[in-house]
Amino acid sequence: MTLNNEETSSPHFLLIGASRGIGLAMAEELLRRGWQVTATMRAAAPALASLALRYGQALTTEQLDITDEAQLAALRHRLRHQRFSALFVNAGTTNQDQNQTIAEVSTEEFAHLMITNALAPLRVIEALQDRVDTDGLIGVMSSGQGSIGNNHQGGREVYRGTKAALNQYMRSYAERQARLAPDRALLLLAPGWIRTALGGEEGAYSLEETIPDIVSVIESRRGQPGLAFLDRFGKSVPW
Image (tube, rainbow, N blue to C red; front, top):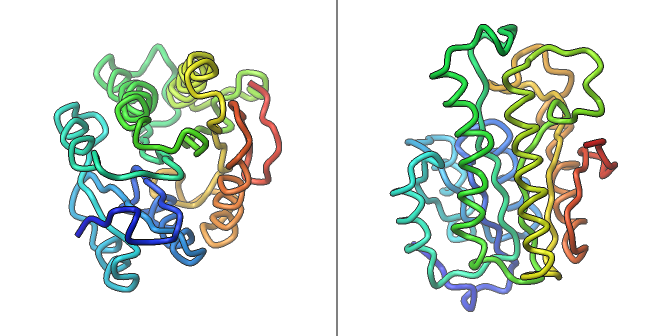
């Protein structure tokens, strides 16, 4: 069931990529804090369905593979009567062998990562930006590994490159939006190395200790126009 914003006094959050890991934990934390959440999943997501049973009409789910332009257009159409206080794109991926150098990765895998991590998030934002309040927030999950200034150790070359590209595309988007929607907050968020399926078991932090910080940073950016690249403590990350 899809709710119109007029039927609830809670702020409405559109979360792209919430079937597991960080996205799923973000959805639950937002619901705890009283948000109305619309969350997307790429395929069947039992954990997200269970969360929907617990929170009832506060959580609605939609299907979206962010790399599928037809699915994105269909989602845009389904949400045409909705308004959101925030849109956040969490969906992303990494390569199977994270030790591969840029010279070793296959063209197909490189293209897949670049499309998923850099191109698709901006397509989502461009497609759904008019569903977000002009003084709301649009954000995307980046990574500290996308920072060129902080790259003193190398490693994870392919993933780093896609996140650096994402940051650059978001920077360009922000420059255009400065003229079109000057009151909107824009955010690139570096969550830290979290133990998830994507981050791996060696991650330094758990979901339980990081997600409240991540959501707090997103909430704190509302009402602050312009683009920021922040970590989960709200500190600026070097570009």
